[in-house]
Image (cartoon, rainbow, N blue to C red; front, side, top):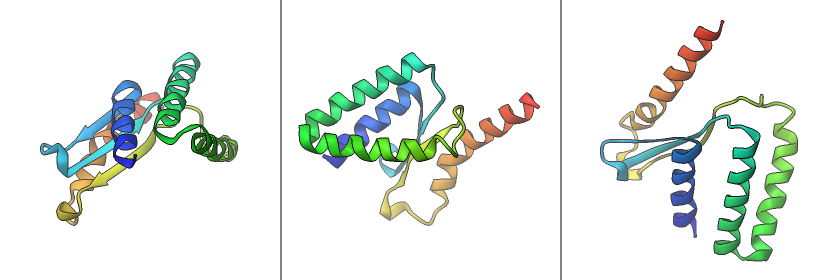
Length: 120
């Protein structure tokens, strides 16, 4: 199930954010979710709920939804609505310690910094 969830999340990043891979995609990925219009967010939430119901079943997907609802209520008080969200950063164990995580994060962080500086 975890493999399916990660694959779904990487695809989700490609749809509503970005998925950054290393040259050898098996070694690492960073998945960012970007601000989206309300209708896109609602559509993606429904899509994810259906996916989770399929792989977890009704009872366990309900537990997941409760966790998300709990976290959302708290996050809404401290995370701005237009935040860029790092959903996943992963580097294969055999490739860790080589700066690959930094290479996965740097392009998106640099873009965010450039946009933030341009906005001021």
